[in-house]
Length: 471
Figure 1 (tube, rainbow, N blue to C red):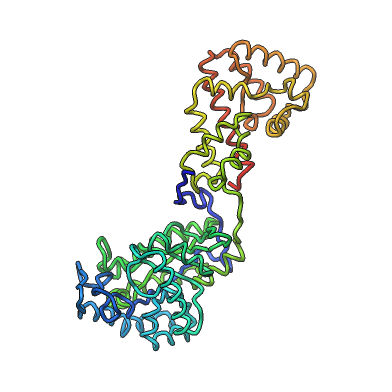
Figure 2: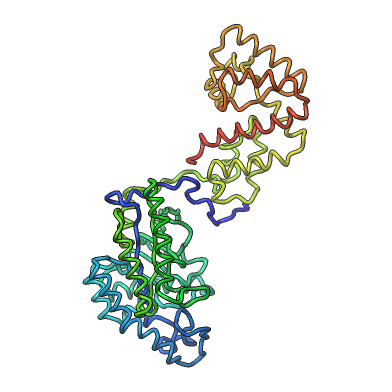
């Protein structure tokens, strides 16, 4: 089975309204990454010093050595930056979610106590603040388990949320196995969503790398607090306007003690918080609050996904979408299907590709498999269920004797001229417009009508798929 795992469909053109508590137009999730004491260091048993997200331009790992300047910059986050942020958030009564590296939390008990007393959520940010890209799956699974154990020991509570950050291709699957209320190692949406992790439904709350103070330490990035404020304001304004239009959204803001905790940078954050708090309908939840709300308001809904069906089930389910032509579904099953094809539009594209690439003789076979409109098969009630419903929806099951005679004559004339039945997506029409199209198209040349009939066959298939799939 040739399957493509990435989901680039998501909620599609009509995302759900988040329906945040109190009718809030936007949920602003503030996340404080606590990594100080969990970064790469030979003191921590690593092979080299840290080189990521600091104020040292172009930093490189120092193999086998302590990097005193790097350690000092991380220490600033714990010694000064954290407390500056703690004073800011507690003074505004804004709760935050902490992404806490377990070993960093263990080395910073006073800060953990302050997080807890402030009512902040302390989620897990892994065992160590290190790269997981090349980590063997068994080792990463073991580190996740150890992170949970140490986190629980240090904070007194098992983490209910997870974000690795420097993750591997296995991270989302491995963390979903652990039963977290939410995980955040994606950046692919403005709203939470569910994924199927085996028999379990896992909530994903996407995170951000752009509304994030890490851009102070990367290029291109921010060089002053005003730039950070401007970007956050623009993101907020766009999402708030969408919420005001009836489609409430979520905004994540990523923060680091050693970065935004600097005096010249935190001013931009403070300006943004004052700006956002000046609007009605702004909710500042912890991520566990978002998870609780989403589970209650938008619970997971499973359905039989076409991309996960075996050949027999796929063909049985969709073999009649193109009238009496199961070979189209059989061939479509061989395509590179994925989550994008679990929607009506996506699967319609896959089936239509097979129809369009078929030989003229094969496509003609599909056309001739269609019944006459209001013809003998309809009168004898021998149409497929789909065709019966479609013709009835246009009133073709309730013709007068004169109308039936007209249809019979037109069917015969069209077949004699073109060699296949007159085909039209009746859901686009009523009885009068069907008759008008019939009379107009009867005089077309057969090549024109062949092309038109093929387009109508695809249109009919699209309507049928919309009846079969959630969207």
